[in-house]
Image (cartoon, rainbow, N blue to C red):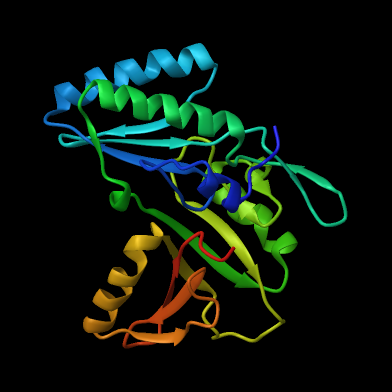
Length: 227
């Protein structure tokens, strides 16, 4: 199925869900681990009937659910097709069903509570260093798709390569990409500034804002807005 645009996902009106980097994310609040397992069982039955396997995490007070289609199709401006995990209409429909299950279980969503961390490497040659990182992080060079390395079992965060002009060390090569719901990003940035950070670039805000710690180490606060 075709990968949905950010605008199409926003137009779907999924109040409980937020699109972060690749997937739809939702956090549902539960009273206990046992209640979380009951809710998860109901979700599992619905997902099995739909032939989909979501990524889930259950804690004492929450159930996190992430949805993406592994066979999503993206077409670049030249018409070349790429297949990699992303959100499709199938995921939007399943998200609606899961929200309905949450309602029947009297489980409340916490859309501001979702978060995703990515790691980025600045490099002029992703094709040269990418296979190494794919092999190191996942055990297989097959985990590299385009400029991204994604572990299919979610053992490690996603790693992606940001293309730069050739440069000499010691320019910082690693930085963190922290994906947040749009309504949370500003508060998080303000908290970082109050803790001694600085904004080094907000030219692309709200898509991303670059912050630095007092030593100059950088992190990007990312949202799906203006993408």
